[in-house]
Length: 418
Image (cartoon, one colour):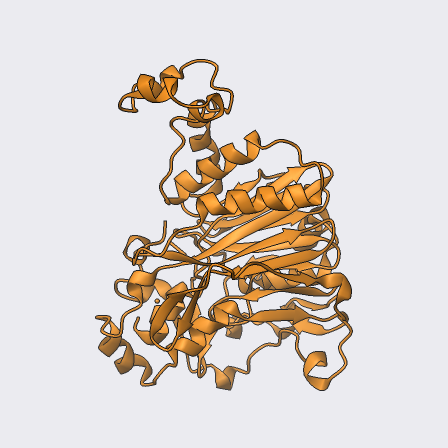
């Protein structure tokens, strides 16, 4: 779920943004949470593509440094200048057609494995974004006949958090730009394009929207539901969810739809608590389809929280059901919970990297709270004032590689992505 040799290993997982995003959206509480997973089965020194990779890039990569980037934080400052950094097809895009903005709001979150793309974050207005992996995505190309400025897809998270005070405003702003394919910096002037992502935007009013890039078109699903996982696309998941609508926590009578598929259904039903029996048939595996169904069903069964602490507990409880254990194929690296009403964000690191080893954190390693209300988002130092997105000079772009051109890595199933 959520690594060419050392670099390409990380490139594909760069987005390591598979995972699951959920929303406890029950007035007056709005808590969004997510996991970030990673295909650990590709973490190997003797990965077959290593020699192939070295022949192309002729460089050594510090794997640990790149992986640790997935645990790195990024802070967006108010009034900092940004110009989208597209990289792809840049010769055909006039400079005055590049999206340009100054941050209106401060924001905070975590980066991906490479580049400055936020995979997860929240701004001071209670708007949150999560970027997840969506194999099969085909990003739109720049259209010179479209008079709107071009905004690189990998800058979209930063743009939304820096400019929007709600999901509705984010969608209004986005409509003024053409979202186009871009590339992420890997290392030493090398860039990767076609990393397939989709995004969910949520706010403290309970309004959600999902953005996907399918067949070269931007698809916006306004007023989206409370869960997002990975492939297939969002509409497929909604249709698939219909098969599980009869599941509930009442358990008053046997569910004939699922009784025919579960061995010894009657015996299990008769010996289970009603709230458990009514959920017989709920999928328990870690495919994206099952995570979508499981998280959605459980969220729907939760009572209305009595207070903020209840709502945070509910989010943590759902995360526990979709967190992938370390079983050598894939695993959840970290979790986050975002309290949109109080602009709080919590991170918990489950695994960490020490040299060439992957290790679990201790049991007492809980969530760490970050309160945006106590942070200063006024840039003071030169580094902070120049921390926005800037276009890369053409002379500094040594190469751009499509992730689809990398043998073995162009098949999501080989990666453990679901």
